[in-house]
Image 1 (tube, one colour):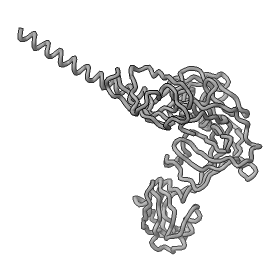
Image 2 (spheres, helix red, strand yellow):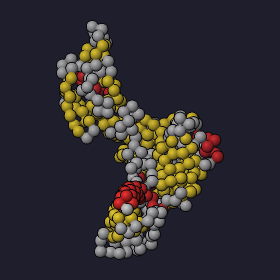
Image 3 (spheres, one colour):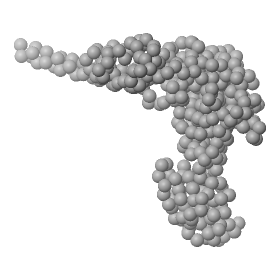
Amino acid sequence: MKKISAYYRIIQNFTCMGFFFTLIFAVKSFENAVPDEIYVRAGETVSYDFDVPVSVVLKQDSTEVFEYLTKDSPLTYCVNCRLFGIFPVKDITVMLVEPETVYASGMPVGIYAKTKGVLVIGNGEVERVDGREVKPSENLVKSGDYIVSVNGMAVSEKEDLAAAVNEAGGGKDILGIMRGEEYIEVSLDPVKSVSGKYMLGVWVRDDLAGVGTLTYYKADGTYAALGHAVSDSDTGTIMSMAEGYLYHTDIVGIKKGKSGTPGELSGIIQYGDSTRIGSIMQNTGLGIHGVLNGNLKWLETGECYEVRYKQDIRTGSAFIVSSVSGESKKYEVMVESVDYSGKEENKGILIRVTDPELLELTGGIVQGMSGSPIIQDGKLIGAVTHVLVNDPTRGYGIFIEKML
């Protein structure tokens, strides 16, 4: 009898442990299945089903946050989600917003930007006059640093840096450097090279150019593009811009994507005042933002769409807008999944290209299509941001609310 009781206790312990771990797993799963924030349009009756057994409790004195919100309601609410109505899962921020419409574009744009200072992309060897090779900047200046001054003299271009170093005549140089958000000063000794010039042994860059896609613009002339940052290809860091511009671009070639090898668009950027479309005011991990300059003869007329927020997105058919063929066209895609976790802000939507014409033209999603608007049920829901390297027919998109 004692043995039977012992077996029962063991079974009970394992059952309790199983329930405990199952509960933890369920809570973690539901955290990802329910968004951190929800945007609710004023005057709209809303009801959301996230396919999880959670109930919500309003953490204020009102009980109508999910029923009817007006412009006179508080702008932000907080609700608590509870698994099975008992176990707290997470808090959701509910924000009241006015309905918003924008013009979805999809046209290619040339992006040109000047760095804020001179960007260091690596350290290199310098051959001294005696034939020895040395690295004067090694362990002092790092890839991703921005050199903003030399001996108190501001530098913004590669030529400024070279001139300031040579002007010092071989004396110790004090470099003013922005390393991330921190300003530091580094002292190092330049080396006289076989060419007779003094050098620091750094590879540097002071500008960047590329092709992307304009996502949308508003009636007031503001715009958003890309859905991800303009980054330096060598350092992988978000580029710190002193100034940046959008230019008219002609797509002249397409390299089709293959498994393991992303495709890309080749374009000719038409530099000049007459072909400048706008200015870049912000470069963030969620895209670039700026103002169109009124030179709209190069700007293809976009179709006006209402914005749809992430909780309204469904799996199923949609389309993207792109000008890869030389004219703005809609191409069919499938929304395969929606990720509410927010772990990767510009990868919330997983899509698959199904349009035969686009598959024949590009093989799917290619570099240069970043920023292409994603439309579902007549609403703008997001923009293309990434391609899956091993399957170019599939890729990610950012929720459009992140780009507003």
